[in-house]
Image (cartoon, rainbow, N blue to C red; front, side, top):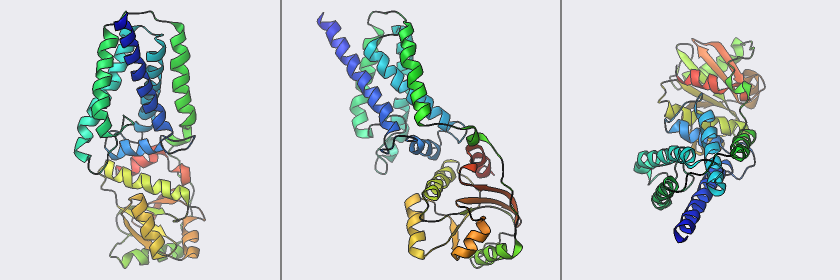
Length: 304
C-alpha cells in the first residue's frame, strides 16, 4: 500500500512537471497566442531544425509534453504505451542538457525543457526515476478517455500557435523597379564598398519602431547563425543613428546597413515594411512584405 502511494505521488509530480514545461513554453513570453515563436527561433539558431521542420516539430513536442503530463495524472493509457511516450521526452531532455551545457554561462535555458540547466540537473534524474516507477507499476488498460486528453492537447497547441498555408507559400509580390530610386540605394552601399549591381543580395527594409520589423530582424539573425548561411544580407533603415544601433543590438542582426531619408525609404520599399528584396546583379528577383516572407522563402533565401 505504501509503495503504491509513493508511486502515485512520484508520477503525479512528474505529470505536473511536464505540464509546467509544456504550458511554460506556450506562455513564456506572457502572451496568449504565438508564444512558441521564441522557441522556433531558438531551435533554428541552435541548428536543431530549419524553417520547414522546426515550427511543426516544436508544436508536436509541446503537445506530447502536455498529453503525457495529463496521462500521468489520470492513467488513462496502458503503461507500456505511456512509458514509451515518456521515454521519447526524456531522451530529448537529456540530449538537450548535454548539448547545451557548454553554453551555460551565456544561455541558462534549454530548448526542449522549460526549466534552467541548473534546476534540470535535479529534475531530469527525478523524471528518470518516475519513468522507472511507471515501467514497473501495474500495466493498466487503454481507455478511449485518453483521446479526450491527447487530441485536445495537440489541438490547443496548434490553435494558440497556428501555422497557416501562407507560411509555406513561395509567392513573390509584383514589384516595378524604379531605377532612379534604386540608384540612391546602390550609391549609399557603394560608399561602403558594397556593389549591389554585382552578385546576389538579400535586402531588408526595416523601420526601427515597427514591431513586425523587430520580429523579422530577430528571425534574420537567428536563421543566419543557425543555417551558417553565406547569404549576403543588407539592411536599409530610415531614422537616426541611435535608433538603428539599438535595433541591431536588440535583435542581434549584425549585417551591413545604410540609412536613407524616410521619403526615399518609402518609395523604394513600395510604402510597405518590413520589405525584403532578393537582388541579382542589381535586378529585383523577388519581393516580399511582412508575413509573405514565409517559412519556405526564408529557408530558400538563407540557403543560397
